Length: 220
Image (cartoon, rainbow, N blue to C red; front, side, top):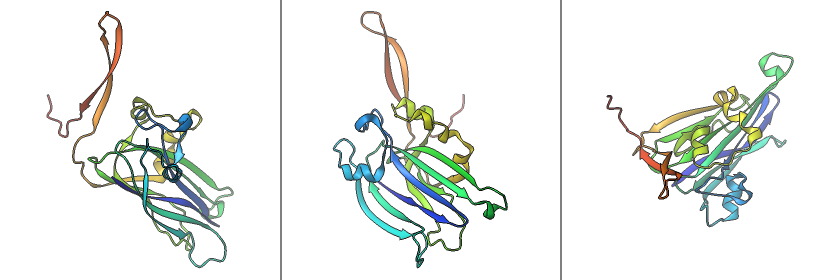
């Protein structure tokens, strides 16, 4: 399946922003040392266990025609496996002058998604710095995926740095990302649950079961 992501950074007098996408290690797709890696690096590592392939890439300067390097954005289409967990990370700073204050304001946020061929087609729009010099007007991630909670990710064995967990729950995460649904899901997302059952010798054994979500609530 394909996803299209825009990553990079820009820096103007009015402020700066940067957005990146990382592959998160999970039970299904592990990474060396159980550490997240930028999706571009995973593609270059050519890991048999995580088949991520670059289909196309287009790089654009943050400010066309500028004699000064103000950053750049790269729009890349990747072919990715079903069930891959990704972290979308962003940071946006507005200068004091831009907001009429003595000091600037910086927001850092992150969100988790999981690719699924039968999920709804969604687009994540990343809030940028409003500047007349900017040549790139939209920074997005688009594809068929589910938005995960921290609990969803934990149930799938996702390895997340504990010192950065706050990035997923901070107000900035809700302020710098906007999720839009473009097309409906083809089938409901399975839900994995852990149940405790008795083993052959009467001991307690934990097993994982997968159930399908109802696409329509039928009521009681």
